[in-house]
Amino acid sequence: MNQFVSRYGRSRFGQAETGQPGQAQASQTIKDFYIYRTVYDSLTSGTSQSANFTVEADSDFMLHKLAFFADIAAAAQTNNTLVVPLANALITDTGSGRQLSAGGIPVPSYFGSGRLPFILPVPKLFLARSVVQVQVENFSAATDYNLKLAFIGYKIFRL
Image (cartoon, rainbow, N blue to C red; front, side):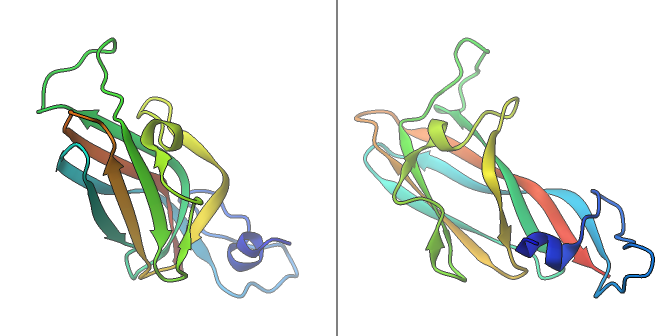
């Protein structure tokens, strides 16, 4: 039995875990959809910026998907002119000190669009009060970006 199942059981989103007849439950949980985000305004070419989000103290967070939105000087975009940033991202769980990759990964390779987010091969659990650091490096020779990263998953509340 994997860590997630043994800790949280097999409940569905937004529903309390009820357990099997005749089996004692250590605790009940509720899962609710949630998105954390990081924002990088004016990510200047050749520079890097770090941003953090803190998993709220009321619940753990299970990360399932990643998405990004980028623009240049807040200019209007169409489906044919969507900005694909020349930037790398490195995600670190500061509580454990673990990085989610061996180094910076290009944002379009790591994060999908809002319509088609990148689905993690294995969901990543961040415990309550964890601080997640996301460092982004703009490797473009001349383009500055505004970048928003979305961390899509669900909060796990223990009852």
